[in-house]
Length: 460
Image (tube, rainbow, N blue to C red):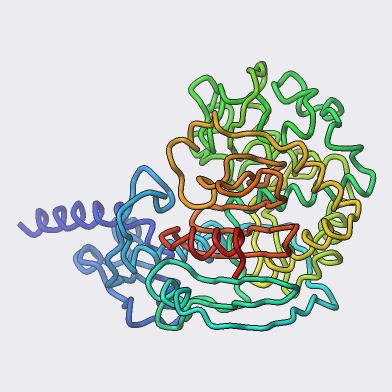
């Protein structure tokens, strides 16, 4: 009877442990950082039942601290992230998502290395003329919005941050926040600096000098078509998902998509050998910006980090360091730059301000920004756009070199360019009227039209 009970406990606990395996790092993080109202240290039933130091005792990790949280977290098996269109997520689910965005990459699956740009010795100092906005306060109190910054007339006019009783106890104003697809646009800004420093001729340069691209659909394509997600690769990839026509076995079953920081570009591109370009139309994916960033790495060689430093340290004058992921156990020759980008909330605004200055001062990089705006394309044919993704992506019907453009209700000629990342990461710049709005969030359940779109369209 005792043996049967032990087997029952093992099976029951093992099943539960398998379902909650993703929580191990999260619970440990809560406990080690003193969030005792959410977590406690426990000993599982199977660990109590099994003889100490037995194989089964070790198998169930009884030699390691075990924790249990009291949060009601909902898991979505078909997605590694909180789905963009779901019911209202509760606090526990959002807190777990915040952990995955901000802390998990460094704890659960440590990144061995990053391309890090150190802070500027003289970071840009913003001027402020702050005003209250009770509606944004309510959004921060009730939604997954973490940070809101509005910049007008060369000053910060609204500066709001998640309150302590919401998510403010877990992050602060210097925390590096995950860019998600905003990182794609950071790649474009780096490309502009590489062009202006002479490493790449112009946006019409053909990618016929990089051996890794030979015998793939991307070979001999124009750089602007890569930047515009207009490379004719829709038969092989949508978003981060590879089609059935691609041989995924060339990597392995652990391949998690194009934001996988354990796979270098040489491994990515090996999947596309013997592929043929289709009739181009806008096809949003992680492949094109990954290609663009690693093409800059290829063209700049030993000067790659100098270009990153020039872009973010010298131009944007960041106060905290910013990073792109670097694929561990790889090399520059294989293309080890990953497009996932992290920066603090103010540094996202500093980078946007640098773009605004480039445009208005007609610098070389400003001319690059204007050139990609002039070469923008329509994204009406893009399937995922028609399916109604949240926020900015749905409002913008055009694309310009990794920027969203053509906002509904606003003239297509008006130079407004934006960045949008999963979970509510938004940076929108009105180059003509000197307005910027920056949001960071965990999930996009806040009122994008009212707090992002309308201030850009009409001003305060």
